[in-house]
Length: 269
Image (cartoon, one colour):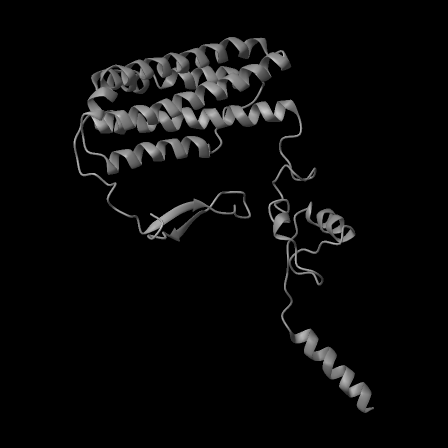
């Protein structure tokens, strides 16, 4: 009787404890089963801790795993790059006015003014490319363009109006245009491989327009801007020893790089 009473007490205690309800993705069970067979355990399971190198692969939307990837075919890859540049074009158009206000060179201002006034031209062309693959126009966050625009913002915040700031912004704008040229070039190669005749002409026009802007910026920089910037005199930083050194660290679980700050050994500086 004592054993039965004790067992009943244990069952009553378990029944009164709140149960944790976990909602699993439909891909969760096969992924756990696969990892278990491989001797790898995920969070919430007994066994060895998962290897840090597998942290990125465990993400359900990472294309490393066949059940979680979104780029399985050339069509998927083309659409991914297309959404990327669609976002990038809109982001640059929104930032062009702020960059134009900061730059002093009239030729660069004209390029930015044209980009602002004709911002709808590349967007409409990309709309037609989306139509060629029978997809709704939609952007996808482009971290590369966000980073390039952040460089422009950094130059504006740290620089003083004049030839040096102009040279910095021209270099940043060339990075943006170079990115556009390479992205459109990749999309163009994919379109030719896939036989997308309606998209090829649009992509060629967009690539050539970005290349023209890049070449124009190069001529401006190599003309007077860099010469004037090299003649500017200011406070020299060579005598200063920085307190910290920034180095790239290991990427996080989502694959995004981290910046690690380390103290500088002033004896070696």
